[in-house]
Amino acid sequence: MQMERPMAREIPDLLAEVRMGTGKGAARQARRQGYVPGIVYGDGQDPSPIKLNYNYLLKRLRQGRFLQTLFNLKVEGKPDTHVICRAVQRDVVKDLPTHVDFMRIHDESRIKIFIHVDFINHEASPGLKRGGTLTVVRSEVELEVTAADIPDHITVDLTGKLIGDVIHINDVVLPAGVKPTIDRNFVIANVAAPAGLVSSEEAEEPAEA
Image 1 (tube, rainbow, N blue to C red):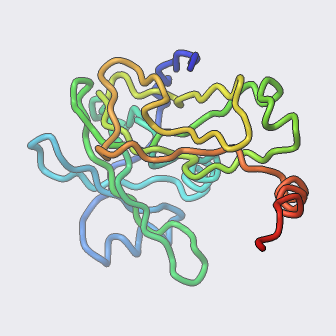
Image 2: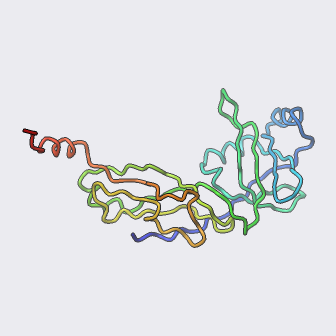
Image 3: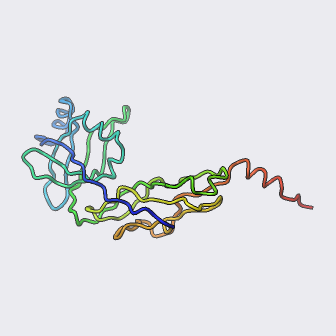
């Protein structure tokens, strides 16, 4: 299967401020002031309390893939740090962010992260042309990658795919140094027959004597 070579994603900036104090009281105060409290940990350093502007963070979250993005965290008075978000705590009623956890990452760090699967060349699939349906089992796949080379996506080329074809992870050419976190050859998608075709084929089957 011919695959488009995924491009490494750019590392976007994420703006935050130092949060004074820790504990529930300090966190509540940050929220009253229009911020979402957070913490940065890892890399053998002490945890650093931070806060992010609520509307700024909400906009970022709504852009999607927040937990799949390596960020360049910028905090005034601190050196820039590469981080990845490991948790977003939300209000159980409003489903809005109340706290975020970030982990410091070195460029050479090996991390596990969910990567989006992009399907291309639908028009070149005979199965889809016949009315088949692309059934996506996994729109994202957890991969082990080097932090400096996180692919933006992996690509599945549907050229030549027939009704009944099943696409497994081993059918996808992954970038060098990237591997799935699951050892088995799991299914990513398949080309299913249209309901009308299934019905007609069943009708044509001879009745048992």
